[in-house]
Length: 125
Image (cartoon, rainbow, N blue to C red; front, side, top):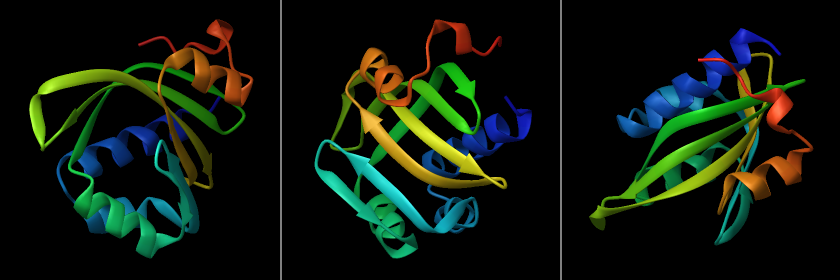
């Protein structure tokens, strides 16, 4: 596990949550893959579109990391329903301090299973 991978993922969250789209793009690879409950897409233009229209904030909670993969359990809130939050988990692949892929899952167990990470990969806070 590299602390730079975790730092990249935390900076990515900060940029998303503060609507700093340019920094979000700078932290992402040109061919970033983005996936979630509504499907998948690829590229910086797709990331820009999602970041400016999704209206989501993701507050990191527990983190798991191993070999460039970081899974983050998050509290998610949407601008369209600010009083309603849910717990989700997102799997990030980080390479050379850039997010290469980001896939949101409905829960931590699913995200860990999709990445072959486990409780043994829990990052101490």
